[in-house]
Image 1 (cartoon, helix red, strand yellow):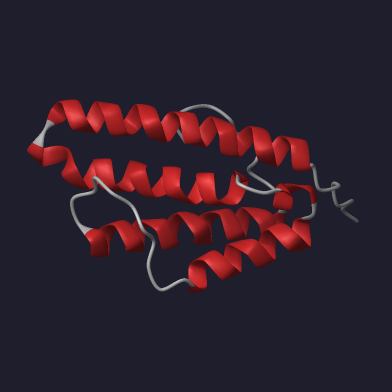
Image 2: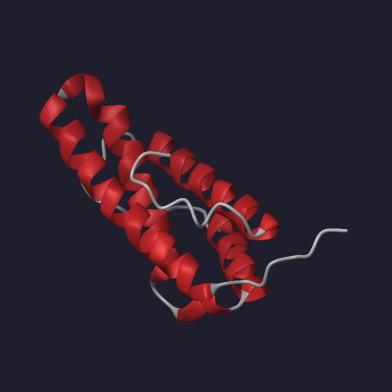
Amino acid sequence: MTVEKPWDGALVRKWLERRLAASRLDQAAADRRGYEAQDDYDKAAAEEWACRALSAADFADDQAAFAKRIKELIAQEEYPQTGIYDDAKFERHVRGHLRKIAKMTKANEGFEKTLRYQ
């Protein structure tokens, strides 16, 4: 019999902050690499957008509210962002990051992994 661990809003907020910082560093690195790294830049910008949108309010304190917010964001038609290279790929990457976070939220695991590279 497994015991479910309780939802830890502080850990989720810490994970979002760390991923936000890592995505900014990844964008800067991709920007320095130039043309061939445009997709990497868009991926990092998408992760930044998703983490910023999820950390904007206090949804992280309640697992159900956090999951609901993720579903709302996935259902959005577009994700306004300036400075990206390919809008369609960016939106696909945003939805991918949101789905990844949704799986982590449902399982309540993965938020303890706060290293830059995952």
